[in-house]
Amino acid sequence: MSNSVYEINKGINRPIEFKGLKAQYIWYLGGGMVLVFLFYVILYTAKVNTFVTLSLTGVLGAGLFTTVYHLSSTYGEHGLTKALAKGKIPKIIKAKNRQPFVKKAPSDLSNMKA
Image (cartoon, rainbow, N blue to C red; front, side, top):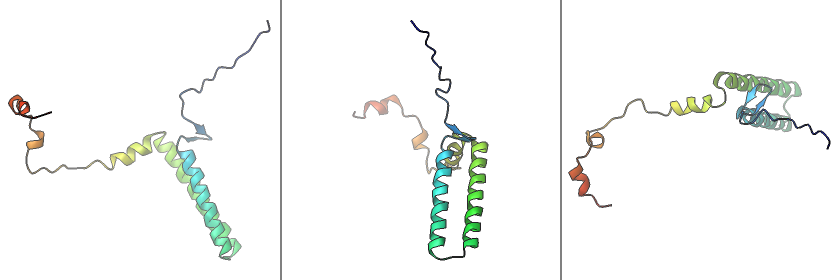
């Protein structure tokens, strides 16, 4: 029999990474580039000066790249989602009485129907 050589895939269960961008940031950059391209098309069809169109598109594209790479390096794979979720947690819970927090006695539970 011939000797077979099999490569072992060592990237199993690791997040997708492309040139330093991790996980969802690849999609953010792709979607942002589509929006920058649409912005360019709109300015070009509106007959705006070519120099102005290219300079605005270049500035927006550079800003998009730096922002997405900064978010990717700052928050990592799931950090941005966690940071956005943390902002939605209420700072204070106001209650008019303690009834929802008081443990009910077993006698009260026996009167309840299933």
